[in-house]
Length: 423
Ligand code: SAH
Ligand code: SF4
Image 1 (cartoon, protein in one colour):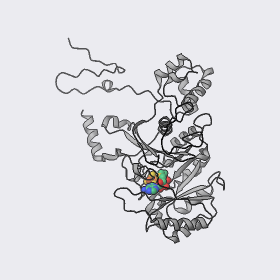
Image 2: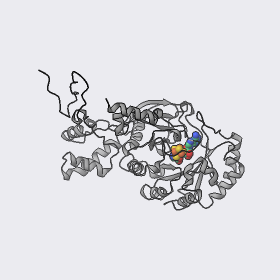
Image 3: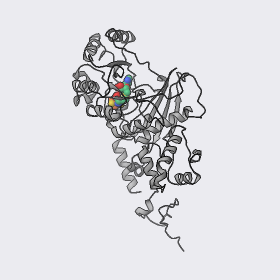
Image 4: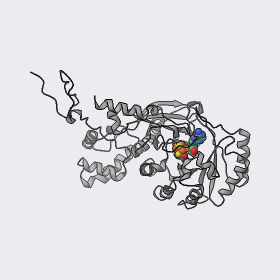
């Protein structure tokens, strides 16, 4: 007698194949049980709701959420059974319904200067499970210094904007990261560095020797435009800044934007972190070319938004990033115009030597020119640090982050999808 057709959607055993010919699977047979969700990246309110959903009595929820928050974000627990202050029964219940998963680390590179880069694999979009599209990847970079360790975090896979000097902007696949995937980058970095309370610290060249924390600062300067993924970035940064968890002060968190004007004031009001603006040109005509978003939000509008950024003051200056492109935006007249343009705004100017990537039409300005440019800015009263490129040997420097996931063209993806449908 033939085996009965297996229809239990929760069974991990696939239905028995039909013996002859092609029989399309029913939706029930195609059902794949959803993966357990991770608690990483839930807000406190969401965590409390999650506890309610699994039957934790109302009177206990707040306290339990508080305990789990501590284990997650102060101690970096990766398994529920590490949470010794939580009852055994609750740990078992949590285990049944949730995970503490972070993004999967698929590669780690360590530069001669101590910079570390992690390639993280994220699940693809839901439809990609069907189409066979690869999961998406993002990069996260750790830049150590003697007295600090800065983590450069991504907000999107790729970027919808197409700044002409930026490698990420040439990537085809784009999707927003979830708050869990953004916080997950901080978790992964702290896991790899042993930067949790009670953990064994990583050792190696270039790691900070002063200060309690290996990850002391966060910059949203990885892949993507953070203000085009506003809610997720906000929720993630509020978790990072939470004083009873990761506890990185908002003054040590910097969000860099190419100039999404309507969301700049929102960032000030709803996140309250430091702001960096990718200016790169002093004239609209040139900025339109370098940062095409300028056509929508030109320089004057952008600077107005900066002037009224909540909390901006001499103690909380806005950083203006300026990439040094040979023969394009690096004349001494440009430097003078830059100083004039920013007059009245509490500002720092960060000159970034252009990091070339294969196929780019730009070159980095000569060192001598960068020095002269910086001198004009300095003499006008601005700090003008030139950002030393870090991790060049592992392609970790600004604007070089571009995952290998782009590979499939739209046509290839459609073809794969069509194949999956007849599967
Ligand atoms: N999308 C955001 C944040 C990520 S990029 C933004 O554009 O601000 C972080 C910084 O690196 C930005 O100032 C960006 O303009 C700069 N950048 C991009 N490509 C670069 C490259 N090839 N060389 C140097 N800086 C680059
Ligand atoms: Fe996107 Fe920023 Fe690169 Fe422009 S510079 S393409 S906004 S990541």
